Length: 495
Ligand code: MN
Image 1 (cartoon, helix red, strand yellow):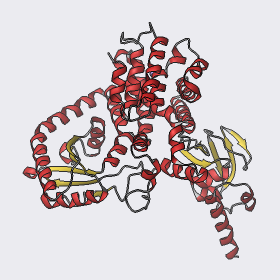
Image 2 (image 1 turned 90 degrees about the vertical axis):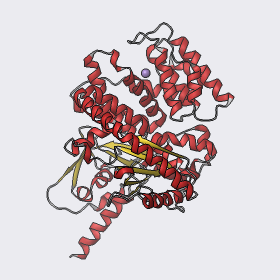
Image 3 (image 1 turned 180 degrees about the vertical axis):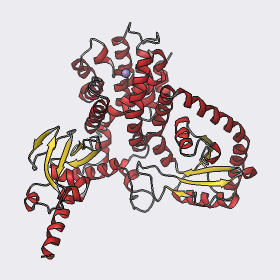
Image 4 (image 1 turned 180 degrees about the horizontal axis):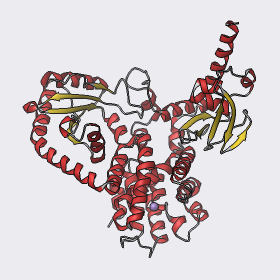
């Protein structure tokens, strides 16, 4: 049975009296509200609220988010209203809880495609308002998945499928690797029990063999790094998760011997320069495998992931992957966007971390979209860090809208963007050939102002055509503007 202390112990930010009080207040409020309610497991309903809040604390969220996590099912499942919540906890927390309640109201209807799109759309709308709503939703879902065995089989299938299709990609997009990994494994277990078991068996067999040389490698590398004066913060063995192993096995004819990153040694060192030095030391000790050195520090993955990976012939000539990163990269890899709550507290300045990265002010090319948006937001508003962090107002999507293609791809546009901007955001040639547009299935004029969450369909002609000069009067994006100008100019020159 979980209690208030479990939340306190998991809380990663400094537990100030103010934060402690807020969490305690939300705890007893939610406990009273849910009194007498039971889960299918037979447990008190309130245990689910505590478990959700605990997950939020574990990934480093602040006290308001943890409090909202405790309260997240209160308006939905009890007689307490949102107004009462606001009276007790203020507008901000009440709004977060309202966001979660709204998201929870989505009902399965229509065909599956439609259901999927609708869910995705609502998620992104919620995200546009306050990303904490989505993070709480992820924690809520994680606990529901952990206790899915108590549900009837059809419900298990439906929830597992929804988790795999919507929550796993969302956690991935937000870079919360910890939650993404566990959600994927839990869903996999229900959706494909046979392959789950098969992968688990392969995995266990392999790890038994790997254990000795993994330990040996860690010991030897530790010694080597120390000799070279590298201050190793942590060095440990990490194993690949079941679902991600399964995906890789599928690409390699289920042959486990063709997978090189099954076991890895993870080395955490203080600074970026230490990472490169460590790489040199590792290669000096163990021969690297050709073509397997990946520098995700200079070239981060699209979701922002940073580390150096290399595959080596380790002790006994066994193949091992080595991953090298700084503590900050580690936090971001595990907790994604949530890591910034931790950093903003510890180092006083979120911006210092996000923008003055250690690589001499150079911002990595493929930095994650939301970081870009944070930066734009900061430029526009010019507010100082403290105020921003204090309010924890992650409304950096405020002046952006998310529109969807009929296939469900999300196009990110500035406010008041038109179908022409949308078309050019997809492809220049689609922009040029636009003849009309539909929004949520209805024809609209080309200077229509797209709203958040709308599904935009661009009608085009098959023939090559020049853009219309009049579009320049109403479009909003500079990308569209420059494409239109260039096309018109080039056509002039050709006459
Ligand atoms: Mn819940």
